[in-house]
Image (tube, rainbow, N blue to C red; front, side, top):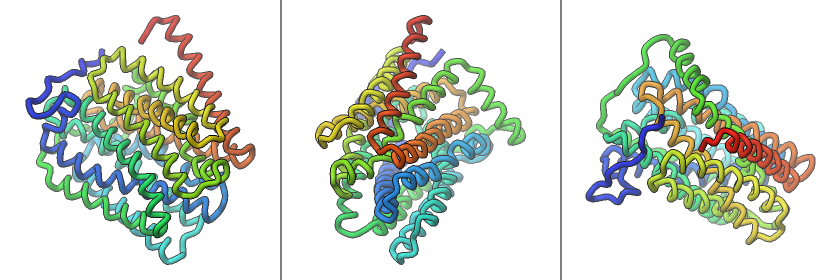
Length: 412
């Protein structure tokens, strides 16, 4: 059974913000807010740079694939390594390397030496670093809050921070791109990593529990837990399907911004911002008190909403309607991913948490990579609208199947 996900609110903080009463989590939250904003600025600038240089939807998909595939390959192994070491020190190291990667990308772009091959290579490097960094950050959240009952709220607030940056970052990136260029966006992201590094240096915490045994045995223990626990296995399948279909919209947004709506980088920023607004709304909902049954139902409903939003966006030629569809899509994808993460981390023992999170993130981002690659290839052959219609249709078939299973078994 999942533990109850409620907590008594602090006298200083409302229930929806209760995890911020923990000093270590506040330090992390502030540093991560600055870093995540820079990440979104770079992400939008990179997609615009690729399409500006190559006019290739297929290369947009390949770049996303290169940046996310290492999550699928490296992620599960990284989880076993993470659980055997001091997570805070490892995170400081990965944040430093991520800052260096962004600085090199800025220098290559500013000097005019950037090209498609270098972009793909830098994307692979980013993916390898994120394959370690993402589960590290997620599994450390439990150490930043002293009361385990506040962990679900900390996870929801962490996701809210991410989605706030997603709402603000893309329009900001569009503004910076219009005034300067991609190199400035990459340089700002490099500087943003310093904020989280300084916050982690200020955190005071013990090393915590570490897994014992060889890498092989530690890895196998985490994999067996994920495969042999029915609830975990079912949730992982849901994450896989939603991310291979619904999350593919991110790859195609530059195509729609320029070719469907005859816009520029600002149009791309608005589309990203609409999805970010929906994501922000979803994390506000998740930050409230949700029972396990309510959360399962909300996750299923979000998958249905994603399928419908994909098909509406694909058929729309009106920017206002497309922005509304993006908001629904952002809401649905985030509810599915963050809600599942909350359930998984609330259930997982601490000593297994790094491996459980790494399997979750590798599934989420790895199949996001596969979906992005497929979407880019389909868009290059059939056009962006048809690629998105196909993704929405596949997801709707999955939702109907899940609805039948839920009805037959009468499970939440």
